[in-house]
Amino acid sequence: MKRFWNLINDVIDQVDVVLEVADARMPEITRNRKIESMVREKRKRLFIVYNKADLINPKNIKSGKNFVYVSTRKRFGFSKLRNLIMGNKQTVRVGVVGYPNTGKSSVINFLVGRKKALTSSVAGFTKGVQWITDHKGLLLYDTPGVIPFDENDEVKQALMCVLSPSQIKNPDLVAIKIIEIFLEQNKQALEKRYNIKITENESEAVLISIGKRMNYLAKNGEIDITRTCIKIIKDWQHGLLLLNE
Ligand SMILES: Nc1nc2c(ncn2[C@@H]2O[C@H](COP(=O)(O)OP(=O)(O)O)[C@@H](O)[C@H]2O)c(=O)[nH]1
Ligand SMILES: [Mg+2]
Image (cartoon, rainbow, N blue to C red; front, side, top):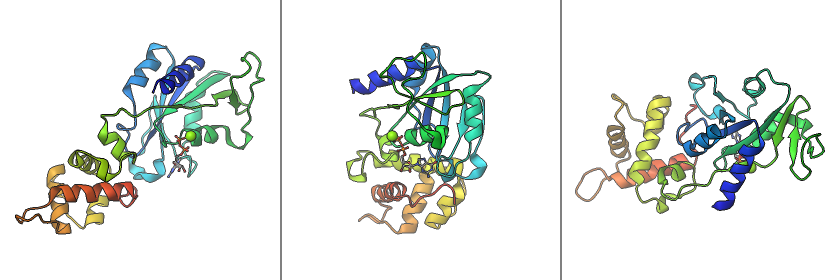
């Protein structure tokens, strides 16, 4: 745990700009407010990079002063990201932080492209600290800061596929969160997947209609909520629930 925090601290200290890589499918969940306030306290600039934007409904792609939606896979959002980072500066030192698997390494490669090169010899930088340059004023700290999961943040870990359904203590909280993401971003995709009709944006009602449609019944004839939740979590984790349909 400590070594994660040491590296995060180090990354923030070494750079002018911190990129926090989050997942566009779950923009709130994959951010870490504690690190964001650390960056602000250290008076560094912070930009949120919502990666994997190819996996969301294009109409939900937004842009702003402090964040950008990109896809390192489909290669879009690059110039926006680069402009945010550089502003009107000639040289900018950049560090990347984020939860595991959000695409930190992909973002680093995305920014430097094929010209990727280790440049510990860059003038003014201590030997041993490895920087990658794009040869156009951008210097990337070569080791991203991996944000450790908080033990009691079950919803986060479940949505980011770190916990399997059988390890989840409160599957209802996780399934409700998944439904909320769809209600916010792409209701039709959920309707299509489970062959239901959503008449009001009420996650619990949606959960019940999914259970009904699956015919998941408990002994007393009522909907088996837990089984329904587990099914939804499995579908999410196996990539069967897509936001870009
Ligand atoms: N669909 C999609 N997948 C991506 C994108 N960027 C990264 N990935 C995938 O996400 C996974 C994690 O990427 P990686 O860069 O290794 O993440 P890191 O652990 O944060 O360094 C890999 O399987 C990548 O192929 C993207 O823009 N779109
Ligand atoms: Mg990596």
